Image (cartoon, rainbow, N blue to C red; front, top):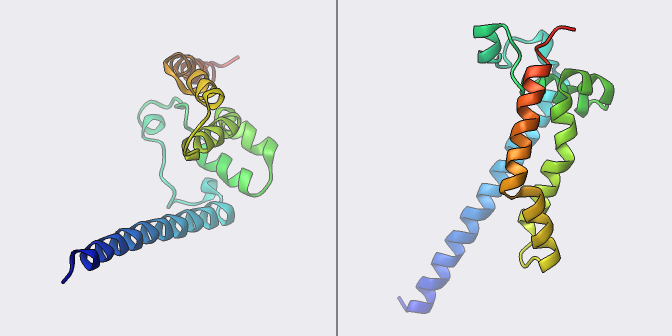
Length: 141
């Protein structure tokens, strides 16, 4: 077998593997979207419960995220916001991060914004926001 045919077969296998991976991701995400849109986690036992809340009785920063996703998929923004406002407010930020990661050859301007929004300082700011949200959502006023 010539080397060129071997290289072609290897490249073809890599392309098939990548395509299969994306197809599986697409099917899995589609299934989860269907599941969360159709079924409300409040009334169904097959959705996982928060282990932190089960052990302590306090809400973690992620508590209510499954219900918020259900409400978002059903276009009930206010209900989603009431369940977990941090999740709802973080969606544009997460989408922007995904977009930044998809850019193959970012310009200097894009790199500057990416560093500002997702660099070390931003990580500490996000840590403070999540911690404050965690504390404040457990305080009874």
